[in-house]
Image 1 (cartoon, rainbow, N blue to C red):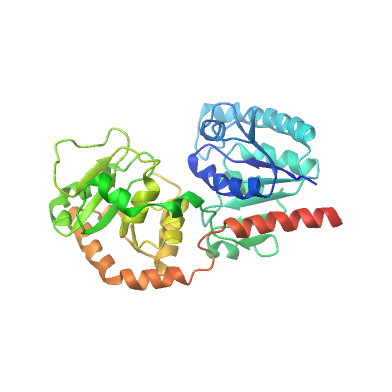
Image 2: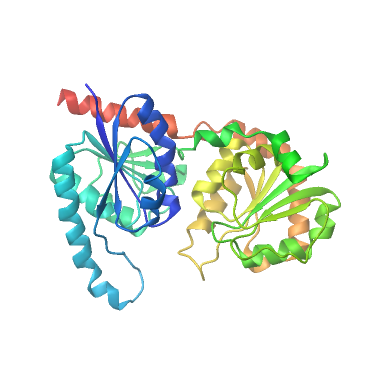
Length: 359
């Protein structure tokens, strides 16, 4: 009998892309796939482009840790979203819900719990975001990306699965990328500053770019509006944003310099790319990237360079350390059994369905 699943998660791309990793496997096993998200969020933009995934919109209110006048009205939107989600779930009658977090997921998992639909949630960071803190009371299983998280939520509810990774990232063509970029045979460093780019990383790279390109080719994904056309150096290519070419660039690069967002760094881990991580400071975040980076450093996957200490000189020094430790990092990554959590999470979903059938 055909099974029906509801996926949810949104607010940022990081709450959507892990769902994208599961969808091909769900399609392969003939699931009827539905997605519940916000009316105008990034998740609608991404999911609406997919075939055989039906998108449903609900009203949403943002969950904030800071003062805003909207904090007085958004709880009513969350309540409205709960009734929207409950109505949709009663119409679809899914067998299971998978939640990737973000504020849109809270009313969905609460409604699923109310109508006795099993919920499997996934947390990307070591410490749960506010949405997943609320949602965990409704979840039957919470999958974790980092082993460190199991200290807070123990088995059997908490399960270390790693992060689901998009299959297309493993299908890159390095020679296609080399031809596109016009690079010679020098090793390649890929620099990424997150979806919007990072001014401080961009500046540090450009201050040291002549020294770096003496030894390496550099692909620099620097964010919208951040390309510096005045820099024309052989072996240095800048992009605002990369989509279709990203698997090819991953295949070509030897090392990666990046922020420490959980989804991205787990993609680097799955691809076994030695990395320098420059986490967002607590001035601009809740500190989750710092914890993510420390975990990777402790496990031998990365070198961490705090942005307070970032300069052209410190970046050059970190690249030297990275080159010296690269093979050791790759060996550590090869031993990681949870580098790609897609199959593990799918197996958990199937076990939940089997248990539901026997209850």
